[in-house]
Image (cartoon, rainbow, N blue to C red; front, side):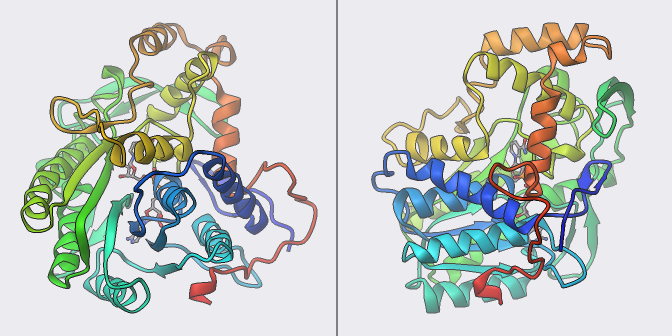
Amino acid sequence: MIVSPKIRGFICTTSHPDGCAANVQEQINFVKAQPKIENGPKNVLVIGASAGYGLASRIVPAFGSGANTLGIFFEKPGSEKRPGSAGWYNTAAFEKAATADGLVAKSLNGDAFSHELKQQALDIIKNEMGGKVDLVVYSLASPRRTDPDTGEVFKSVLKTTGGDYTNKTLNTDKGEITEVTIGAASQEEIDDTVKVMGGADWELWINALADAGALADGVKTVAYSYIGPELTWPIYTDGTIGMAKKDCERACSAINAKLAETLGGAAYVSVNKALVTQASSAIPVVPLYISILYKEMKAKGIHEGCIEQIQRLMADRLYSEDLQLDDTGRIRVDDWEMRDDIQASIAESWQNISNDNFNQLADFEGYQADFLKLFGFGLDGVDYTADTDPTTAPASLS
Ligand code: NAD
């Protein structure tokens, strides 16, 4: 099958198996070119492991410290008629490379929020990974969650928690700046977003693993968050999603207390940089901010993608002597994004940006290239005019 991009708003409905493999290989090559992570993890569970930050969180321990990994995700397999989703092909490529290096690489495709999937994960850890994990990365980004006990479905919304908020935004289809007004969420919508993207499911995972004796002594767990500059606070940090992230910090304290007491372990929230992923491209205002951010960070030579961020998180923070926690105990690998000089330039560009100077002040080309890459398009060395096999699948799920 010849596969080309079909973009609908902020989603691409096709993915290229060979392109996704090339994208994963680029990330593996990057990690292999870095020094090994001293005392890095050896048995890792990644929840949300097929794309974005979670995929990078699987690649770094595997190829940076020789870790066996179990990856959990919700992806669509391909068929003879239709390509599957990018995360499916990313995982196929990851598993192939990891097993070629002698590592255990297992995957589960299903609903991470369910009790069933947690049980399946415990079985794999017990039977195929020596019984215990020493790192659990929680990197889910989902628009909905079915409560595993009641069956009730909760949907997250991207709204403010104050009044209406109007600001510039980017129509990523047309490359046009427009204005968007985002309305305020009701209390029910805030509560529902917290149920989906908050820390409750992270706690359920850790409790299930702890109860089954599947956590190693000194285990670490980390979940990802975002803060960003004041200009995005109404839609992010002070918005519904920000309330969910606050709940992750609540969960983090509870998990940390439990792990410290029982296993000498620790839980962290890591605040990461804003990057183009399937999850972030759905947030109004943020893609315009990211396009300007890319311009400024590339100009200063400090731009990073997911793989560079997670390499730094693991090598220079989680598995180093100095976690460099902020005053509320969070890991900050958004430190370069939040540098005063970067943010001052962005604030100025944000003020002045319009359709007339968009390409001078923002790196939309970089944004678009990263967006296409998420689905395996635009990678060097891939012949997009050649047939590719849409039934490519992760070996552990075939
Ligand atoms: P992503 O969309 O690239 O990946 C989401 C992952 O979750 C995928 O592996 C997907 O398969 C999985 N998933 C979704 N629903 C699932 C379900 N029900 N069961 C099992 N798996 C499911 O997202 P991302 O941007 O990498 O986000 C990961 C985390 O990082 C989120 O907590 C996000 O808030 C945080 N973060 C993102 C950014 C950013 O700019 N992208 C910045 C800082 C923090």
